[in-house]
Image (tube, rainbow, N blue to C red):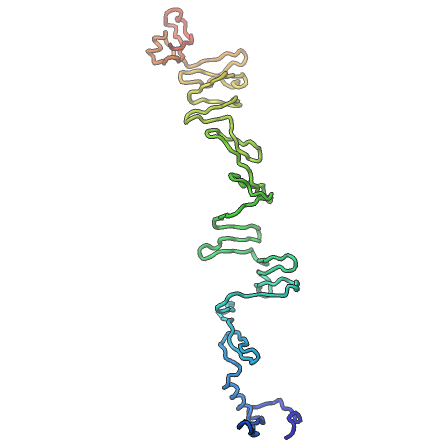
Length: 335
């Protein structure tokens, strides 16, 4: 028999083409026979020497050097136009691993649309050394669940800001723009647009005292000189300066001198009535005269008592009493 490679080569194979084979009879005998290509193909298909598999599953080598194929845990699923899926059954994780010596580009999972980058998640390994979640297009990220969506938003277009639609719970410190964590009772105060926030001392005070700002723009609160004594009384511990009108709707007690300057009442007058003090007409700023209007008139003290005037109240004579009270207009104090 001639050597095989000395025969001319044919590339147009058909099922009826013959192959020369040595048929095995036993360990000592081989018989030369021929078979067709179609017979050989049928034999190979029947032996399943290439392995078995399931439609849509990605295959994997299962028998090392023997080259047997089988299903891998990954398969594709066609849910319709635009809904194709790649599924890892009984999956644990996808791993993107690269040599640490390779720093060109960052390993990442990327989502694109018609070849245009939209968002990605990966690791910056070319100097930064940090994980990243990037939004390459659109308005940012929305994070949520079926319970609340979105629960948190990261907006990148057009207004850059973070929006929380749920409560914040802090189990650690809040650090202000100066790196401070503040003290117990401090308030977090805005420093204006683009300047961050800062912890500030809200100050302290004493019970019943009306508070005032004691540190200007820093907003620290402290005690004023005005104190509420009980329900119906207010105490001013120092001078009271009234730049405009001053009205007393009930009884007022002054423990020290009361000074009324001409400037304070130049636009009005001070009148004394049975029920209190009120401004009615005018205090003469030139000669210091005080006009008392509206006092009830009686002949004398007895008549004033019969008329309902209480002790220590003011009234005036009507001129009908005995001398020296026979002159009208004398201001009297009911005894």
